Image 1 (cartoon, one colour):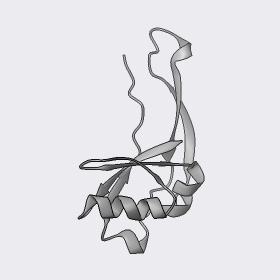
Image 2 (cartoon, helix red, strand yellow; image 1 turned 45 degrees about the vertical axis):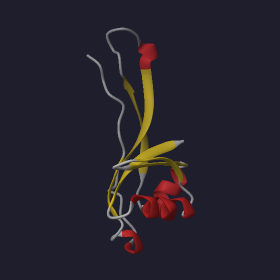
Image 3 (tube, rainbow, N blue to C red; image 1 turned 90 degrees about the vertical axis):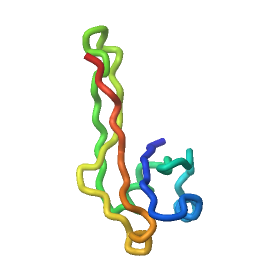
Length: 98
């Protein structure tokens, strides 16, 4: 499952409920809303293209510490009907340890 952080505008619970109706899973609601779902739902809803990347988070230790993740290769577009409710969406990448 892919996850992302949504920065809401206004009432967080209302934004979360609206995203849930669109098919996203609500993982947490705090200052930001963490949502999850399949790759296809993110690409369709935010009209973007994502690609899979792999990084080694502990290169000094082993090649067995490769982590796969997805990130946008085109910028996400917030749908018009949500522009007054969603400020931004962020896709976090795994940390790299040196």
